[in-house]
Image (cartoon, rainbow, N blue to C red):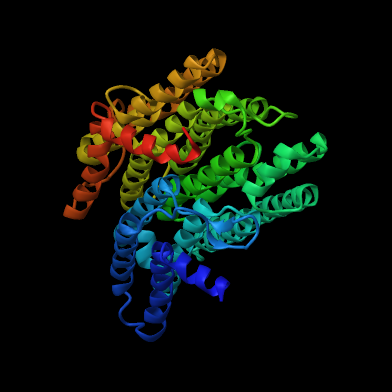
Length: 504
């Protein structure tokens, strides 16, 4: 009876996830029984996400763990301000993806399986919600698989396009390897500590003797699984092919929401499992890592590798989606540098970066989608002279690319400023310099697109036709990208509130 009472109590804090689950089933049923009413699917999706957002704002944070296992008063799930921050980013990404899908030529032409598209998008969102709040390695793995399986199918949604099927197949192969490595790491860590709960793992590591080499191997395997989700080198190989082959709407949501969920669980795993809470320097906000292995050293190497490889590979790309894929790898590298600090300012910088990255990256993909639907091409050379034929779209794309570079007065500058300032303040000057150099490298391939649009003669027959929906969505992404470049206090306050749960 106690277990039943615990489950019923936990459900009071589980309303957002329940709302997403119901959205998934409603979309399946509508597609099954009302096949002539497929226009209802995006509307129902939006209603479901709005209701999920309402519950996310109104459901209080749990004072303890949910779905307790009865051992040491720990559970499988937790709802806190940290998870709420990432769930908000995920939810906004899903809403924008549905809005993009309504206007997408690729999605509207695929009438046969459009119901599965919106249902899988809801399933994808549910998996990411579960991933951000899970505190047990088994529930983390199950949520990880739920996200992966949904995204594998969505990546190959346009079945008649050969590159889409190829993208889906490559995604499955790389995902299966990452999943296998991750579950093997979990099994080693369980064998070492006797538990899969990350709080109990921390308790064991802080109070018992253990084999350091075994712990490092297990930790790296698990981080490798998370690294697959965030496109961290050397687990990034799937990203360019999948981003190029998937519909642009799915590429957009993978580049933001999937990364957000991956970073959320990576932060929680490292911060909870490997931090020495008994250390006195925690009071100074510095993370005191448990003796045996300094995780910041390996994270520094992965950060430099990820941002450098992403930017250098982007230099040679002619396909704009593929270029943005390597760009997203580079941005994952920038955000990874926040971990290296092992300080609350590093995590704060990551949270600020993600909120800004949401608007500028989705904005770039949205404009690319609109131009691609009209041109029938994503080749950068086909953008030649578009600045004079489609000034609204090209100016908007330029602003998003400038922000992605990190040039003031756009919000991208604030994102990188907070990140690099945190590195400098904590003695990681060389890593901040590497980040600055990489930002300069990224300027070349971003401005190459701008040069083609505005500084070369037009060879395109493109004719601009701007609809009200295009303008409204574009402005909803442009305004935050510009406003957060000059007024960012509310964003910083929200991010600061979100990291207090870690005792900072």
